Length: 289
Image (cartoon, rainbow, N blue to C red):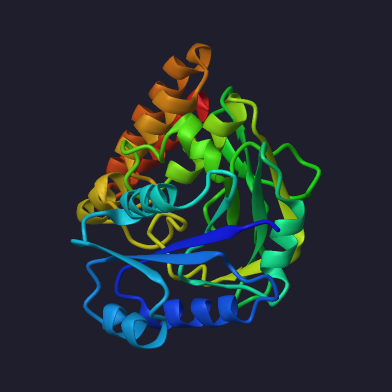
């Protein structure tokens, strides 16, 4: 029987964590273990787990682990106590699973496979994520529209990894504390011969509004907002993260061009508060693309 160890992390989001754990309890294929990394929550996560889920493996942080540090703490704990022939399922705490989810994942588990899940927006019930394609020649990361599109990277929202993968490849990159570390791990796994795939039979429901900044660039811009988008830890446009993602994943022949694109995007965001400069740089950015 395939053993799946579930790992999630939380920071002051007890309501969503409670809902996730309820759906895990209702699964036909029971998890071999559940590990929750609580990164400095003050909303009663510890008390709730101690009272209602005493068998869960509880690990705590100081509020500075972020997503990557939380997962790495959990992975090290699981590796220290479980067989490397087992599997690890990472799942964000703001996700919901149907009753057949773990059974579906277990049936498709393979030692050389990283298996992701179709993500559906819990509010709109529309498909949100089918994995992504990365084209380093253009510097674009594009969400897949069809399941037969090339698959280059997966999120950690419902992804099954052979535990042995982490002994072979190491943990998520500490250079990427919050965002993109999941993509980097998938790219690294693919480079080392692991196959990436995605199951659509048992989708994951996700609260897509419970995420960071950077998806929308509409509305008035101030210098403060631009700086937050460029350097904020919860910003998906964080240029330090983008730099490290290029450094760790991009083929050498495309790195110089993608560093130039990153510089251009940085200048573009800094120019957003100034309409005239914004329009000028927007036209220049098109040339770089």
